[in-house]
Structures are given as structure tokens and as C-alpha cells.
Length: 239
Image 1 (spheres, rainbow, N blue to C red):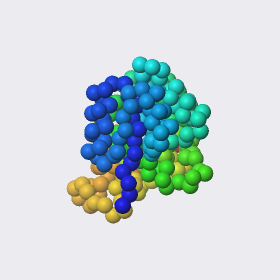
Image 2 (image 1 turned 135 degrees about the horizontal axis):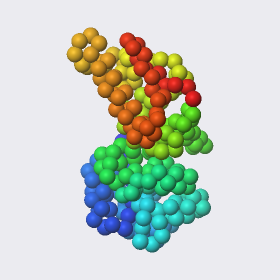
Image 3 (image 1 turned 180 degrees about the horizontal axis):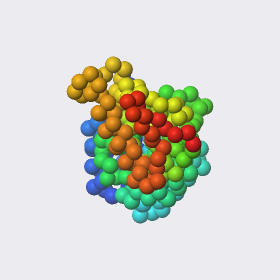
Image 4 (image 1 turned 90 degrees about the horizontal axis):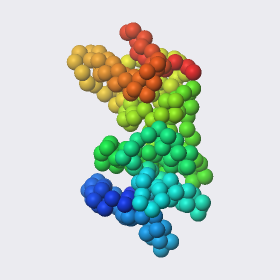
């Protein structure tokens, strides 16, 4: 039986910290909460084990970024995820450049947070100890396989895991079109059936692609990488 995911949560908002810890515990996580960096590092020195660390961006004493730097300077490579109530591209870049693996707006909710944490820890468990997750780049598109995140022009697009899989699939084809059926299989699994009629899945694919395109457009109004091939499917323009 696999042990629960151990999470260390550092946040100086007592109510938020206790609420998140309880909600994650309800979803099978084991959470250790800390109000500041000092108590967190004291626990580490006393043998605290964590599969992933959740850091609030803004703390009363110092910042989450300071804690991340201290962790890395001390040789600890545990995955770090930032939580913030103010989601700014500049902060995201600082977090990723500092060695964080994810950056999550608190408003996204506990289910999104729990899913991200599972993806991160499962990715860490699956890869060899000496292998670092490598971002995939296609022009202005950067894919982060370890966390199923996509960035366009260095800004997070906010894709769901299913949307991420579709974009990664299309980008990997290097401009070649993918059929509606192939895209639908990526979104679900081979042979999955939904929708009305023999080709009802095409309507679902169009809806998925419209939602994906809309998220990229919200980041870049000039976005035009997704191309529709009438009666066939979609492709991602080569950079």
C-alpha cells in the first residue's frame, strides 16, 4: 500500500493554512502546517519528510522566494509549489527561475491544487533519480511535462490536464494535422464514444479546441497557432 503524499505547507494565514490542510487531508494527503520559515526549517532539521512543499508567496517574515532560495542553497531538491493570491506573470517567472515546479493562484480551489500536487509527486516518483524534468519548447510555446502546465510567451495559459495533453499532442506533430478522432482519443482514450450520431465526438472536439484557443487568446490576442482543417481536424503551426 502506497503511503499518502507528505505535504509541508508554509502560510502565515492561520485560517487559510488550517482549511487547506484539512481539505487536502480529506483527499488523502498528509499535511504538516507552518506559520513561518523558521518553524518549517526547524522541523526539517528535526527529520521532517515531505514529498512536496507549498509556500505562500508573501509571508510576514521574508517571502516564500527567500525560503526557496534557502532550501536550494542547503542542497534540498524537494519540489516546491508557490501559492499566491495575486497571480502575476512577473512572480511566476521569479518562481520558476528560482527552481519552483509550479505556481498556483489560491482562487483556483482545492481540487485544482490537489490534482497539481499529485501530478508533481507522481512525476517525481516515475523519473530516474538523476533525471530532471525537461521543458519542451515549440517557438513561443513551453510545455512543462512534470506539472502539465503550458506557457505562451512565458505566461501560464491555465490549461486543464486534458487541454494540456491535446496541445502537447498537436505540437509534437510539428505542423501535421491530427484527425478529430485522434484528438478525441487523446482527451479520453482510444475508442471512447460520446455525443450524438456516428461522428458526434467532432462537436466535442470543436468545443475543446474553442476553449483552448480562447485561453491562448486571453494571453496573446494575436495568437493564431491552432489551425482547423475542415472535415479532418486540427494542427499546431510549426514555429
